[in-house]
Image (tube, rainbow, N blue to C red; front, side):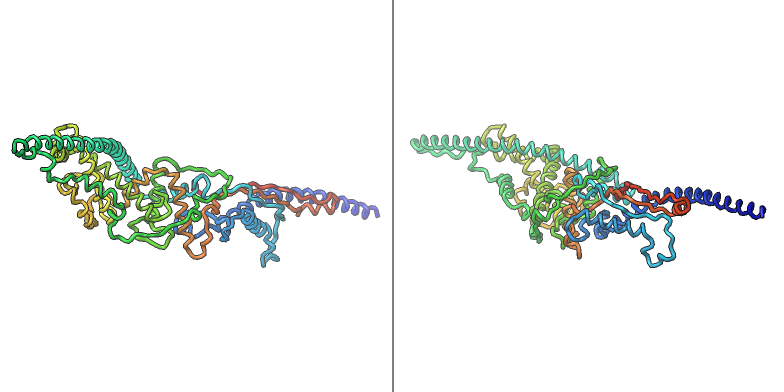
Length: 520
């Protein structure tokens, strides 16, 4: 009897000790599981962010290599709450594998329950004047740029600065010459009047003696040489597109202010993104991106809201023709500057202009007037050559940045016949720089901040013409966001000691802060 009681005592003791040890093991396992659940909550939150940003606009990526999520989900009505609900649906799905068809075969050790999920910050494609657009475009160009391309772009930029310096000098000299030419015309008229009065007096005096006096040598009546500047002034009054585009068919497309994203007062995100790209090289690559992705006058592409899209980025007008006119005027100024520098530096051209000026105004006997007219002739000569240059570019030909005697096209003798020369097709001239390369120079002379906004204007208008994207807006495009989620971790292994030791069950709460942005 005593032996049996002793055995029973040991069995109860071992049972109690086993419960304690088993509860301890369960507690330890539960602690490990809770830490794993915390990590799983962070993973699921990241998966939710990735899932949302996996719904990027495919056409935007295909056509422009830009990642962004349409915050309106195709409706045109931006709502961050709608995106928040989409994120929460992904979170719930990933946190509850038992919702799947094979849930009976699954064991979920984490037992996570989503209490709340909220997007706290977001960044849009249009924030900071299109900073994300610029960063992604530059990243793409750096990843795909051909070796040595950057060196060429730097040379193009240097050429643009050289052309700009020539343009500034030309504009300064042109302003001074115009003022002097007005004074010349006034003095010329006064001199003519003076000579006419002298002639009348002489004729009156000689009539009394019945003697005739022939006109004085080099008098204005004897001059038969026409001043080519008169024809230049007539050309300046004509419509510039009619002169340089000739009979080419021009686009008549226009857009309204409400159609342009840059004119729209849209929403702004508060999330600040990193901006690793910037500076001269990045700007050059971004401008090359614009040239590659948007058509120009010579691209002969149609179908969008505007056809001359690089011209729009440069000028920002609402019609194709106004943008083309603005570019033509800028090209004309660039060429005038470079051609003027060549004229004033060439001794033979200076001599020709001086001889013609003496022939036209030398009769006044005022050397200063001859010098003024000579300068005006050189400016007019540069203008005439520049008109022909731009006409050649618009025809698809090429013009060298700096002229030589072999590439100079208009002689001073034929400057008065420039209107006839402008009727000829210039596409056969293929020595020098093309229209596209001159557009590159104009882009290099413009602030990149303007180009980012206008580039987004064209991007939006182009995508809107694609099937199913009529409500697309660039200021609805999300490129980054931050979120906060709150989770409850239900007990699993702690239920065992809770039953034996009557300790009760406990759940745990965890808050996860996460974020995502498309990589640059």
